[in-house]
Image (cartoon, rainbow, N blue to C red; front, side, top):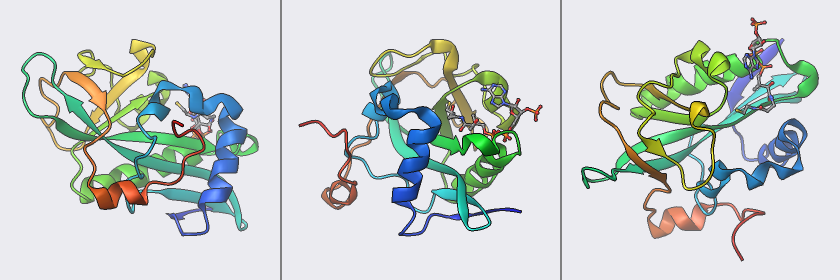
Length: 186
Ligand SMILES: CC(C)(COP(=O)(O)OP(=O)(O)OC[C@H]1O[C@@H](n2cnc3c(N)ncnc32)[C@H](O)[C@@H]1OP(=O)(O)O)[C@@H](O)C(=O)NCCC(=O)NCCS
C-alpha cells in the first residue's frame, strides 16, 4: 500500500537519487531549475510516497513571483509545482496524482493562491491545471509555451496575471536556508 507523508529531515538524499532516476542526470539544465538555485523549497510543502518503507515518489514546491511587464505593478507571489517524480517501475498507480492532490490541498491551507508549472497539459489538467491564464507568463529561459500551465487555488487570484516568472525576494535567513545546490552558480 502506498502512503503519502510530509518530508522528513532524512529524505532529501533519497529524493535527489529518485529525481536523477526519473528525469535523468541532465535534469538541472532545465529552465525551471534556474528558479530554484539558492532558494529553499516551500516549507512544509514537500511530500514523499512510500511503499514497504521504500521511496516511490516525491513532490516539492518552490516559491516564485511574477513580475508584471506591462502594468509595472508589484510582483505577485505564486508557487512552482515540482519536481514531481515517481519511481519508473511504479508509474501508472496513481502516485503522481495522489502526491499532487495532497500537495495542492496543503498549499491552499497554507494560504498560497496561484500554482504554476511546466509540464504536459493532458496529465496536469487532471488536477486542475490549464493553459488559459498562463499565456502572458514568461520564464527566464527557453520553454515550450504550451507546457506552461497555471492553477488558481483561490478563484480569481490569477485574473489578468502576466509577466516574468522569477525567484522571490528572499530574506537573509531564507537565503541561508537554501540547500547547497549542486548546480549553484560558481
Ligand atoms: C509523470 C509522472 C510524475 C506520472 O506519475 P504516475 O504516478 O505514473 O502518474 P499517475 O499514476 O498518478 O497517473 C497515471 C495516469 O496519468 C497518465 N499520464 C502519465 N503521464 C502522462 C503524461 N505525460 N501525459 C498524459 N498523461 C499522462 C497515465 O497514462 C495514466 O492514465 P490512466 O489513469 O488513464 O491510466 C511519472 O511518470 C514520472 O515521474 N515521470 C518522470 C519524471 C517526469 O516527467 N515528471 C513530470 C515532470 S513535468
